Amino acid sequence: MLGGRIMPARAGLRRAGINPFELRGKEGLAIVNGTAGLHGTPPWAGCSRAKTSLPLRSSLARSVCEAALGQTGAFDPRLHAARAQPGQIATAAAYARLLRGSAVRRIARREGRLQDPYCLRCQPQVMGACLDQLNHGAAVLRREINAWTDNPMIAPDGEVIYGGNFHAEPIGFAADGMALALAEIGAMSERRIAMLDRCASQPSACLSHRRRRLGFRLHGGAGDGGGTGQ
Image 1: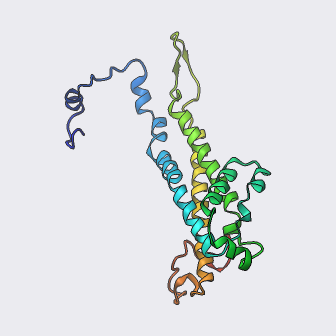
Image 2: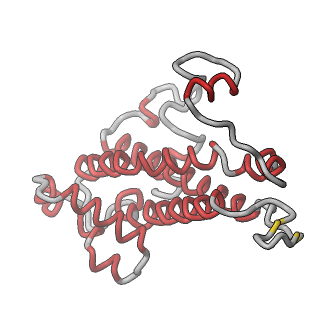
Image 3: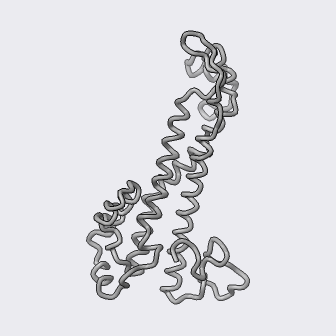
């Protein structure tokens, strides 16, 4: 597609002033190899969207913390430095920065709980672990798209080397890790919604007809206290 028009690739290249790429030995096979598809849109899109949405999720979590009179001591940098997990430290710092200067903090110290539910108190630990997984997955994918993943490998001196660089295990593990992280981000969000639901003294799931609908729940039964952030 060029200028909003679909046309043959040769015509598009000619109009754009680009010379066609002349394939050399093994390059044609490398392009259509199934391994290349694993480097494509799905893992990158999921990782990119998740990392882009993290600041928004942090801002929403800050709002929930204020609405529920959450204690900000759970974001104390000394606590997280003692564990030395990079994602946890970064997430706690982001929450502390967002809550700095909040007038609700004074009310929370006076009227809040000694310890908040997990969905507030453990946000740096959970979201930080998710951030670490997403960063790890992105690093794996970045290495893979710049790597030789074809077989056999033709060395610069012309020697043909047979091996297994086509195997997608690194990407598979990375993608599974990112999927787990995204699921846990959603679970933590659901727990915060359930907590606000109870704090507001609303009917469970914000609906009076529990037997017929699940309302704002992401999965059955979670609103009754199960899940990560009970």
